[in-house]
Image: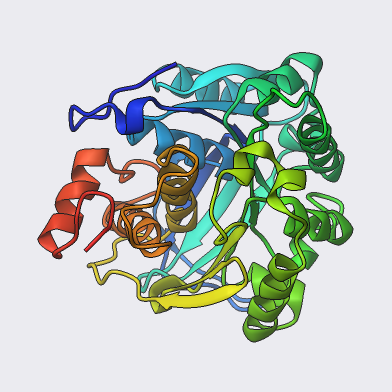
Length: 363
């Protein structure tokens, strides 16, 4: 499938299919007077709902950028699940592999105070019941990239790893998908719900792109500095690109890659074991919820889907992709809720141009 971006250009000669595995949640927002302390209380000035879920956020962000994106998920057979399915049908995201189960739909209760600080509680078993059937596994083989969040049940994460490994070891003429993993959520939050530490460790060594935020990385690695050291060391010990994936074998020595995000304090990129630090764009933030997912989608767009294998990235290494992704995240922060502010490609290009950068983030 080929999509044409809203800027009128066929991105790099064709848009690869990206398969996102994650929840399509409903976010219930409470604008509260304060985040309550233990045994304390708060008053909600406004209560509303919006669409979220890491898997859906990344897929819809890529769709807004003009990419062909599909979602593998499981929703509840209830009012929330029906709303999620109806909403997905209005987007360009392929929801063929979104199953319906009897469990209550996955939803998040988000408390947000006047300063933008948040507390999030997630409920609903629908996504925890996800299984990868034969059709979803076949879709992985046909995709150009597979994205997975750590909120995915461990059995799903392990099956994705096994499937990618089998594809990499398979037919010499095949072109296995690139693997992107997002370490979202602290270790404690993922226990009995998401990807287990041992499986995360496998992703660290198997993923073409490994992303972790400022909460998840220190929780898993012990500290932010330790996260950088561990990721760089894993990359330096990585096997040759031919044994990782034939797609990866056509890339330069800056693969595999990882980015550790620090919110408004910027991000750290680790590429081929080399560390670079970048600043975030300064914007008037309305709501930072989902900014990390928007950032990951921007990286996928520029580094995975946006660059033909073996093609230099605007002649400037990893930096343009990080800037492009940072622009996607920054724009998203200027609107309320997770998905309404996800930008189109022309909006990102205009944002970058106003700051002296080229359409893809190059100088």
